[in-house]
Image (cartoon, rainbow, N blue to C red; front, side):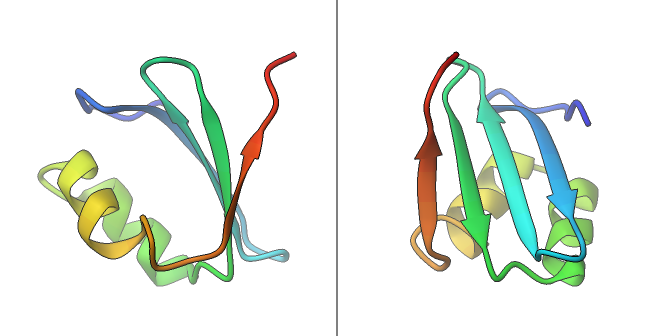
Length: 69
């Protein structure tokens, strides 16, 4: 799902796996694990998705970089 943000381009949430995939404007992608559905909803409804991501997701959940294809 595309998001209105100067830092983020798109996010995808897999409810059953509790995984949040974030694509940044530079097209790098990271997968964050253990993310609750509520955190995902709050990210989508935040007035600044980038600020919410930095304060509530980055460095708070295990993540792995998804290689570019």
